[in-house]
Amino acid sequence: MNTVVKPLKSKRTERSAIARTVGPRGSKRPLQGVSQNVVYWARQLEILYDRQFMTSMRPLRTTISIWRILLWLQDNDCLAVGDIAARSHIERTVVCRLLDRMEADGLIDRTENESDRRVRDIRITAKGRHLYQRMRPVRDQVYARAIENIEPTQLELACKVITKMIENLGGGDVMRPFR
View (spheres, rainbow, N blue to C red):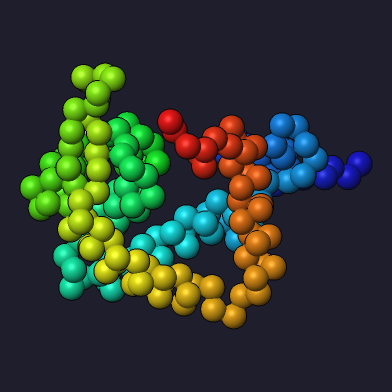
């Protein structure tokens, strides 16, 4: 009688084999490895994009966090601290410290909200707008390098796919105004 000897598998190997064969919500689509994981590649793009932006911004002595805050303030009359934190994806306590620094540098003004004394309205100053306007072309140049040799239809599809993934994770409201 011939006995077939199967190689021993550790529980860890067994679990990873199962994870590779079971897709999201019980679907039959297997989970993708890193090479095919859109979230992984989106994060790698963000890291590289931000690194190149910061290298280009070195002469202005500013940060990505300040850029993000100025970006949102540029397009809004005023925002509360919580709105800035949510939109810029920066923790509220960090936003507060950055706003202290930005106010001392004359980039923003803080005033008491007329309808809620607990809330401070944050507005960009002329100096803040000037810094933003100096940063914008640098950001645009980095973006232009990033999308070089990519067809507009490919960019549109990438945006649609990522937007749909955000909606699938319950974050469809990230682009909606907060007030």
